[in-house]
Image (tube, rainbow, N blue to C red; front, side, top):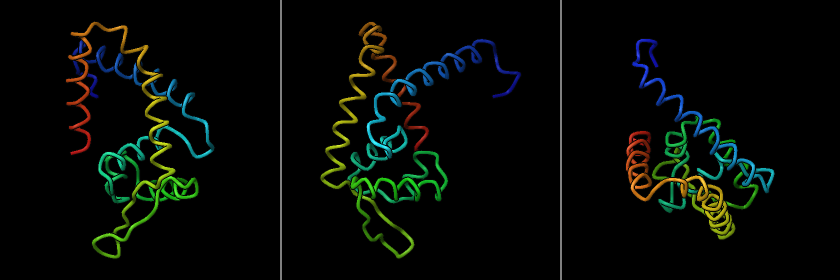
Length: 145
C-alpha cells in the first residue's frame, strides 16, 4: 500500500486487517486439536475437498506458500492420514486427494469454522451479509487467479 492512498482506503484496509486477525485468532484457537492442525492445513484440506484432486503446485499458489513450504505441509497432512499422493500428468507433478480420514477431518473443520464464525456474521443484517458475501467472493476469486 502506498502512503499516497486515500484516508478512506487506508481505514478500510486497516479494518479488513483487524477483522482478518480476529477471525484467524479465533479459528486457530478452535482448530488446534491436533499437532498438525492449523489454519493453513485447514485451508489446504478445504481446497482439495472442493476440487477433489489438487496438485502441490496449485495449492502452493492458492495458499500463497512457497513450493517447499507446501511440500512440508503436505508431509504433515500425510502423517496425519488426511491426504494421499497421486501421480500427476508428468513425473514432476504430485497431486493430492483427501483420504477418508481427511474427509472426516475436513467436515469437523468446516463445522468448527461455522460455529466460530456464525456469531460474528450474525451481527450483520441480512442485507449486510449479502453485501459481505459478494465482496469476499470478489476478493477470493481475485486471489486464486
